[in-house]
Length: 407
Figure 1 (cartoon, rainbow, N blue to C red):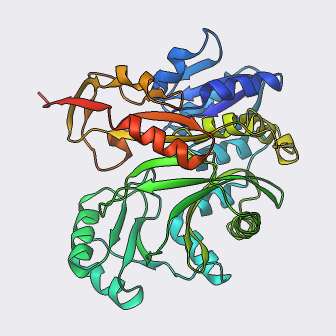
Figure 2: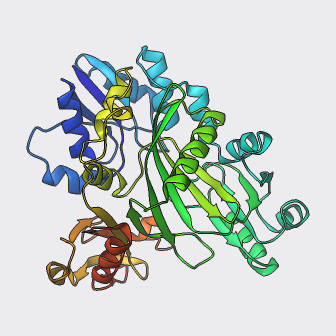
């Protein structure tokens, strides 16, 4: 029997294929662009999974492709972009899966904020803002400064602006007016404190905190993720409080089963939500979860796809492996990627440093202000997340993308 994936995160296919096999199923990836998965497909053994090329933006084409999948038993998705179509198709085909209405709610950051605010789980309301100069008055009257402007359906840190003064506010609104937003622009209060994400697994109202990931973003007004490390060492009481808080947040947001990647700010008054992604964390988060927790966490994804309580919810996770840190390596300007200087130096650094390419030479990079400008990631291990982050950063600064002007 087969478990199909409607697109996926760039990394994790190998773990997913292993997890599907462990449940007696074969993994089949439906994708509109194989190049997204070039690293995984190049390193997997031949025949590890099936790949079907289909226009995944065309619902009817996807229906036909799924109809041709032998003995389809489940449908999974690990992206934000295809989460709603995947939920709707699973319901249409009578396959186990989340309630589509709940997935639609989670894809609307403004509605999630409003739901949490109504239940006293957010200090900030969400205010609809028209892009362009006319939006400034609404922000100043209702949210004040500093504030955060967001695309309600944005992904990969696109469509997010932090504004600390009126000049920055007008600049962000003008930029938002020039960009094609996936949803609608809204404003919320700026949260002061360090950024983290809670990596969780839920099943019918029970949520387990698998660990907390630290996150560092750029200093620019346009948010770009730079560094992450896992697992953050938290006092027992604080970890328990975060686990209880994230369980309440997910319940109010309607997320009752599966992984969630919950970004939050640990403010002076406790955790405050940034956003919820109803999936396993992106970049190398899934990989470091597997390594640190000593188990293939993607097996829980297959359990969910088959409609059964994930064993990971109850499994002992005491035999933990090392901590990990990873750094995203960005191009410093748009152009054509020719390669990288410094990859040969990585072996000299402590931490069993590894290189995960995201782009390949010859690709044109049109955007460098968000995750689209990431050319690869440097991963390092250590006894603690803090040391792993330091090791990954020291190695990553030696890697320099070589960029040529676009012809």
